[in-house]
Length: 265
Image (cartoon, rainbow, N blue to C red; front, side, top):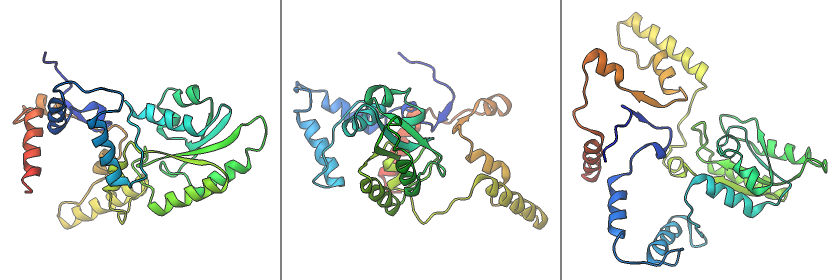
Protein backbone atom coordinates (compact mmCIF):
# COMPACT_ATOMS: atom_id res chain seq x y z
CA UNK A 1 0.00 0.00 0.00
CA UNK A 2 1.43 3.37 -0.99
CA UNK A 3 1.62 5.95 1.80
CA UNK A 4 2.08 9.69 1.29
CA UNK A 5 5.25 10.97 2.98
CA UNK A 6 6.23 14.58 3.84
CA UNK A 7 7.58 16.56 0.90
CA UNK A 8 11.03 17.06 2.37
CA UNK A 9 14.35 15.27 2.68
CA UNK A 10 15.67 14.88 6.23
CA UNK A 11 19.28 14.16 7.11
CA UNK A 12 18.54 13.85 10.82
CA UNK A 13 18.93 10.06 10.88
CA UNK A 14 19.27 7.09 8.57
CA UNK A 15 16.00 5.91 10.17
CA UNK A 16 14.12 8.69 8.34
CA UNK A 17 15.12 7.63 4.83
CA UNK A 18 14.26 4.66 2.69
CA UNK A 19 16.68 1.77 2.22
CA UNK A 20 19.21 1.81 -0.61
CA UNK A 21 18.16 -0.43 -3.54
CA UNK A 22 21.17 -2.67 -2.94
CA UNK A 23 20.05 -3.23 0.65
CA UNK A 24 16.55 -4.17 -0.45
CA UNK A 25 17.93 -6.50 -3.10
CA UNK A 26 20.18 -8.19 -0.53
CA UNK A 27 17.12 -8.83 1.66
CA UNK A 28 15.25 -10.32 -1.30
CA UNK A 29 18.23 -12.51 -2.22
CA UNK A 30 18.52 -13.79 1.35
CA UNK A 31 14.80 -14.52 1.57
CA UNK A 32 15.14 -17.94 -0.02
CA UNK A 33 14.89 -21.31 1.69
CA UNK A 34 15.29 -21.98 5.40
CA UNK A 35 18.23 -21.01 7.61
CA UNK A 36 18.49 -21.47 11.37
CA UNK A 37 18.55 -18.17 13.20
CA UNK A 38 20.27 -16.87 16.35
CA UNK A 39 23.65 -16.27 14.75
CA UNK A 40 24.65 -19.77 13.62
CA UNK A 41 24.10 -19.14 9.92
CA UNK A 42 26.11 -18.31 6.83
CA UNK A 43 24.78 -14.75 6.56
CA UNK A 44 25.87 -13.83 10.09
CA UNK A 45 29.25 -15.51 9.52
CA UNK A 46 29.74 -13.47 6.35
CA UNK A 47 28.83 -10.25 8.17
CA UNK A 48 31.27 -11.05 10.98
CA UNK A 49 34.03 -11.73 8.48
CA UNK A 50 33.39 -8.39 6.78
CA UNK A 51 33.83 -6.64 10.14
CA UNK A 52 37.10 -8.49 10.76
CA UNK A 53 38.38 -7.61 7.30
CA UNK A 54 37.97 -3.93 8.15
CA UNK A 55 38.74 -3.89 11.90
CA UNK A 56 41.25 -6.71 12.31
CA UNK A 57 41.17 -10.38 13.22
CA UNK A 58 40.49 -9.65 16.90
CA UNK A 59 37.20 -7.90 16.12
CA UNK A 60 34.23 -9.80 17.48
CA UNK A 61 30.95 -8.23 16.33
CA UNK A 62 27.65 -8.80 18.11
CA UNK A 63 24.75 -7.82 15.87
CA UNK A 64 21.80 -6.12 17.57
CA UNK A 65 18.68 -4.37 16.37
CA UNK A 66 19.43 -0.71 17.05
CA UNK A 67 22.07 1.75 18.21
CA UNK A 68 20.54 2.34 21.65
CA UNK A 69 20.49 -1.40 22.28
CA UNK A 70 24.13 -1.64 21.23
CA UNK A 71 25.12 1.17 23.60
CA UNK A 72 23.22 -0.28 26.55
CA UNK A 73 24.55 -3.82 26.07
CA UNK A 74 28.14 -2.61 25.67
CA UNK A 75 27.97 -0.36 28.74
CA UNK A 76 26.24 -3.07 30.76
CA UNK A 77 29.14 -5.40 29.95
CA UNK A 78 31.75 -3.08 31.50
CA UNK A 79 29.88 -1.61 34.49
CA UNK A 80 28.04 -2.68 37.61
CA UNK A 81 25.09 -1.14 39.42
CA UNK A 82 26.23 1.98 41.23
CA UNK A 83 29.10 2.73 38.85
CA UNK A 84 29.59 6.02 36.97
CA UNK A 85 29.84 6.43 33.18
CA UNK A 86 31.56 9.64 32.02
CA UNK A 87 30.30 11.09 28.73
CA UNK A 88 29.51 14.31 26.89
CA UNK A 89 26.45 16.27 27.98
CA UNK A 90 25.38 16.28 24.31
CA UNK A 91 25.92 12.55 23.72
CA UNK A 92 23.17 10.26 22.52
CA UNK A 93 23.47 8.01 25.58
CA UNK A 94 22.99 11.05 27.83
CA UNK A 95 20.29 12.95 25.93
CA UNK A 96 18.42 10.71 23.53
CA UNK A 97 17.95 7.19 24.83
CA UNK A 98 15.09 7.80 27.29
CA UNK A 99 17.20 6.89 30.32
CA UNK A 100 17.75 3.34 29.05
CA UNK A 101 21.51 3.23 29.86
CA UNK A 102 20.89 4.20 33.50
CA UNK A 103 17.77 2.07 33.86
CA UNK A 104 19.33 -1.10 32.45
CA UNK A 105 22.93 -0.78 33.65
CA UNK A 106 22.18 0.66 37.09
CA UNK A 107 25.06 3.07 36.50
CA UNK A 108 24.96 6.86 36.69
CA UNK A 109 25.74 8.94 33.58
CA UNK A 110 27.83 12.06 34.21
CA UNK A 111 27.59 14.47 31.27
CA UNK A 112 30.64 16.72 30.92
CA UNK A 113 30.55 20.14 29.27
CA UNK A 114 32.01 19.46 25.84
CA UNK A 115 33.80 21.23 23.01
CA UNK A 116 31.30 20.85 20.19
CA UNK A 117 30.53 17.29 21.28
CA UNK A 118 34.06 16.27 22.24
CA UNK A 119 35.39 15.68 25.74
CA UNK A 120 39.06 15.87 26.72
CA UNK A 121 41.38 13.63 28.77
CA UNK A 122 41.86 16.43 31.31
CA UNK A 123 38.11 16.51 32.02
CA UNK A 124 38.02 12.75 32.51
CA UNK A 125 40.93 12.84 34.96
CA UNK A 126 39.31 15.72 36.88
CA UNK A 127 36.00 13.86 37.10
CA UNK A 128 37.72 10.72 38.39
CA UNK A 129 39.62 12.70 41.05
CA UNK A 130 36.41 14.41 42.20
CA UNK A 131 34.48 11.15 42.43
CA UNK A 132 35.96 9.61 45.58
CA UNK A 133 32.91 10.36 47.71
CA UNK A 134 31.43 6.93 48.55
CA UNK A 135 27.97 8.34 47.85
CA UNK A 136 28.82 9.45 44.29
CA UNK A 137 29.51 6.08 42.66
CA UNK A 138 32.63 4.48 41.24
CA UNK A 139 33.83 5.81 37.84
CA UNK A 140 34.01 2.72 35.63
CA UNK A 141 33.71 3.77 31.98
CA UNK A 142 34.06 6.61 29.51
CA UNK A 143 31.70 6.87 26.55
CA UNK A 144 32.50 8.95 23.45
CA UNK A 145 30.71 9.29 20.13
CA UNK A 146 32.39 9.18 16.69
CA UNK A 147 31.37 11.31 14.85
CA UNK A 148 29.82 13.42 17.61
CA UNK A 149 26.28 14.75 17.83
CA UNK A 150 27.71 18.17 16.90
CA UNK A 151 29.18 16.84 13.62
CA UNK A 152 32.73 17.04 14.94
CA UNK A 153 35.29 14.23 14.82
CA UNK A 154 37.88 12.89 17.23
CA UNK A 155 41.29 12.46 15.61
CA UNK A 156 42.91 9.04 16.14
CA UNK A 157 45.51 10.57 18.46
CA UNK A 158 42.74 12.21 20.51
CA UNK A 159 40.99 8.88 20.94
CA UNK A 160 44.32 7.30 21.96
CA UNK A 161 44.82 10.03 24.57
CA UNK A 162 41.32 9.47 25.97
CA UNK A 163 41.89 5.70 26.04
CA UNK A 164 45.23 6.13 27.81
CA UNK A 165 43.67 8.41 30.42
CA UNK A 166 40.73 6.04 30.95
CA UNK A 167 42.97 2.99 31.30
CA UNK A 168 45.35 4.86 33.61
CA UNK A 169 42.45 5.32 36.02
CA UNK A 170 41.08 1.80 35.58
CA UNK A 171 38.18 2.83 33.32
CA UNK A 172 36.93 1.09 30.18
CA UNK A 173 36.41 3.11 26.98
CA UNK A 174 33.15 2.74 25.05
CA UNK A 175 32.59 4.32 21.63
CA UNK A 176 29.15 4.96 20.18
CA UNK A 177 30.05 4.38 16.53
CA UNK A 178 26.67 5.14 14.98
CA UNK A 179 28.37 7.56 12.57
CA UNK A 180 31.76 5.84 12.45
CA UNK A 181 31.58 5.42 8.67
CA UNK A 182 31.04 9.18 8.31
CA UNK A 183 34.05 9.89 10.52
CA UNK A 184 36.21 7.51 8.50
CA UNK A 185 35.47 9.48 5.32
CA UNK A 186 36.32 12.92 6.71
CA UNK A 187 39.46 14.78 5.67
CA UNK A 188 41.04 15.52 9.06
CA UNK A 189 42.97 18.39 7.52
CA UNK A 190 39.72 20.28 7.10
CA UNK A 191 39.09 23.18 9.48
CA UNK A 192 35.87 24.61 10.85
CA UNK A 193 34.90 27.97 12.31
CA UNK A 194 32.64 28.64 15.31
CA UNK A 195 29.24 29.78 14.06
CA UNK A 196 29.54 33.43 15.33
CA UNK A 197 32.94 33.82 13.66
CA UNK A 198 31.67 32.20 10.46
CA UNK A 199 28.77 34.69 10.39
CA UNK A 200 31.16 37.60 10.86
CA UNK A 201 33.43 36.37 8.07
CA UNK A 202 30.46 35.76 5.78
CA UNK A 203 29.18 39.31 6.43
CA UNK A 204 32.58 40.76 5.49
CA UNK A 205 32.86 38.56 2.40
CA UNK A 206 29.37 39.51 1.22
CA UNK A 207 30.05 43.24 1.75
CA UNK A 208 33.34 43.04 -0.15
CA UNK A 209 31.72 41.14 -3.00
CA UNK A 210 28.95 43.74 -3.30
CA UNK A 211 31.54 46.54 -3.39
CA UNK A 212 33.35 44.76 -6.23
CA UNK A 213 30.12 43.91 -8.03
CA UNK A 214 30.80 40.17 -7.79
CA UNK A 215 28.77 37.32 -6.31
CA UNK A 216 29.93 36.38 -2.79
CA UNK A 217 31.51 32.99 -2.14
CA UNK A 218 29.15 32.57 0.80
CA UNK A 219 26.72 34.71 2.76
CA UNK A 220 25.43 34.97 6.36
CA UNK A 221 22.15 33.34 5.30
CA UNK A 222 24.11 30.40 3.87
CA UNK A 223 26.00 29.99 7.17
CA UNK A 224 22.76 30.09 9.15
CA UNK A 225 21.21 27.58 6.76
CA UNK A 226 23.95 24.95 6.94
CA UNK A 227 24.52 25.33 10.71
CA UNK A 228 20.93 25.04 11.85
CA UNK A 229 20.15 22.00 14.04
CA UNK A 230 17.20 20.84 11.91
CA UNK A 231 18.71 19.55 8.67
CA UNK A 232 15.39 19.24 6.86
CA UNK A 233 14.69 20.88 3.54
CA UNK A 234 11.10 21.53 2.53
CA UNK A 235 9.94 22.13 -1.03
CA UNK A 236 6.35 23.18 -0.15
CA UNK A 237 7.05 26.88 -0.69
CA UNK A 238 8.69 26.22 -4.06
CA UNK A 239 5.63 24.20 -5.07
CA UNK A 240 3.18 26.89 -3.95
CA UNK A 241 4.95 30.08 -5.06
CA UNK A 242 7.02 28.92 -8.02
CA UNK A 243 4.96 26.05 -9.32
CA UNK A 244 7.93 23.73 -8.86
CA UNK A 245 7.54 20.00 -9.25
CA UNK A 246 10.34 17.38 -9.11
CA UNK A 247 11.42 15.82 -12.40
CA UNK A 248 11.21 12.37 -10.82
CA UNK A 249 10.11 10.72 -7.60
CA UNK A 250 12.53 9.80 -4.81
CA UNK A 251 12.81 6.12 -5.76
CA UNK A 252 13.66 6.93 -9.36
CA UNK A 253 16.15 9.56 -8.27
CA UNK A 254 17.90 7.12 -5.94
CA UNK A 255 18.13 4.51 -8.70
CA UNK A 256 19.59 7.03 -11.16
CA UNK A 257 22.03 8.26 -8.51
CA UNK A 258 23.16 4.69 -7.84
CA UNK A 259 23.61 4.09 -11.57
CA UNK A 260 25.69 7.27 -11.82
CA UNK A 261 27.95 6.17 -8.94
CA UNK A 262 28.26 2.66 -10.35
CA UNK A 263 29.31 4.08 -13.70
CA UNK A 264 32.33 5.81 -12.09
CA UNK A 265 31.22 9.05 -13.71
